[in-house]
Image (tube, rainbow, N blue to C red; front, side):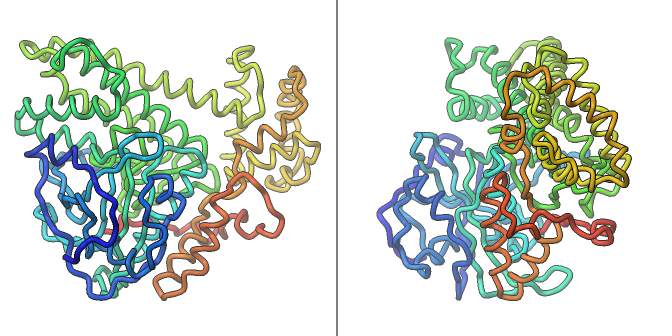
Length: 499
């Protein structure tokens, strides 16, 4: 490895406090790294002081060839339920945690490489990544961030100058990912599956210190700490899934090793944004049974949280773990009602409704009937909400054009207008446009951008990325980015895990 070229220094609390939770490993050697993307605004937010470096220096750093001061590359151990089946050992098979930084707000953030070569957890894989998979994660992560949804983010993408072999040879790349942490439900499962309860406790205490320092119940081993941790993780996940559902995002692979306890969206593999509204929507090529379909995401999140709760039972009641079941069940049983409350509040805002407690049952029925109309007529989910904002401004034509006939909406619109007429505010349309995006990562545009990038042309990617950074501000010259994919494209569209 080359000597560092910057004065920035990493912290290493994960490496120092959780000694048996990882294996140290150097990134693979890369002969011709080339910087594809560098997230300057995120680097500034993190206070890295790297923005003035030449692109070749950045390429060396973010391909792992130059290790900055304090970096301790390590592959984290974790297990996980994958499509319902438990794998006791997964771990970072192509990722390395470099270290941690304290951002401008003081919160610690992980900086990790993805696609940086094989580790002891690779299970026969090459540990590499292709340009398309790396730039998909970069693009979708930034889109989610700009939509206001908690997410890991990409700091850089670097081409390796080498080929990776999947169904066909593809240009290789390495992603640098920033996360509140990389602790997953599967991290707890790894040690629980081995009955290593002291290490589960050690991990839980570290997680509390890092993500929930407000949890203070006397001493480190107080059982109430671990119930409070489960409660906090549950609340974050309820808010996250509600946000996904409100924008029509489908994660595609909600395995327990892909659920971060920080409440951030992590691991953008076979993800997609729904276009024509369908609760059954699935785009992942590996989800043959629809386990992770759009409509199932809240229940799967609850299922994953139940797996986390199982690892915490011996910490909550060491003498009688079964005796702790009613306590955790109370938290788990509250997950769906809490999610539904958050989703309803968000959906009411999308409808432009004020005084959300004035007629909850009426609002629920209004929303149900609205979604039924979208599903029955295969209407684009994103445009339907956005054009409803236009209707609030008196422009019905754009909304009615989404349906086979304008009179389909007449009865529902009458009820909606009756509801909004009860409000004193006159800025209904403006408020709706602040929560209903006009631009999302349209699947055909994402694939177009990634295909071009794989051929060496980054212009479509950079153009799409620029549009997605301001998803709520409609610009007439960008109508292409708001146009749904052709039906024949979506009818056969599949996404892949990218490994």
